[in-house]
Image 1: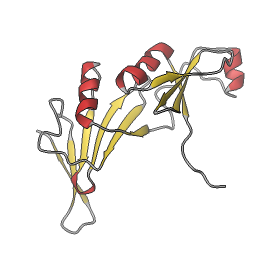
Image 2 (image 1 turned 120 degrees about the vertical axis):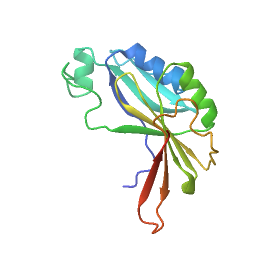
Image 3 (image 1 turned 135 degrees about the vertical axis):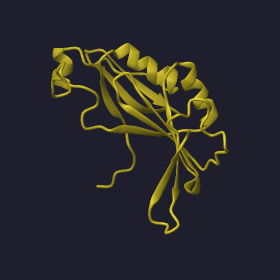
Length: 167
């Protein structure tokens, strides 16, 4: 069996509408057709591919049976999921969009790998990582909200990674 790509992941949201709005308004996903499974939810996609499934954390016997588990009110954050990463383009445009929505973001830059990252949280406290590949970030890469920005470089030995943070 050879895996070929990630199909989707399901997020069980505390506030279904707020979470849907975050993924659409902040990250640019589009709502796509979802069959009627007998419980509320959304399928969200990008470039014609479905990536994110959303369901409400609210009790629903059909959903609870369909998902083969019941999510209790005491669960916090994303449990065993640390973060979800997406490839992205146009770092300046994405930064602007996130800033306009009032969400906080953190940055990481790997100049040698030409990798720039933006991190933010969704309404259910899931960390979202946006990866911009093949970009050369200039001195102003961190933007105005760069208090937590970090540039990672190899040490002289080439084995350790050092970090410099914005001041």
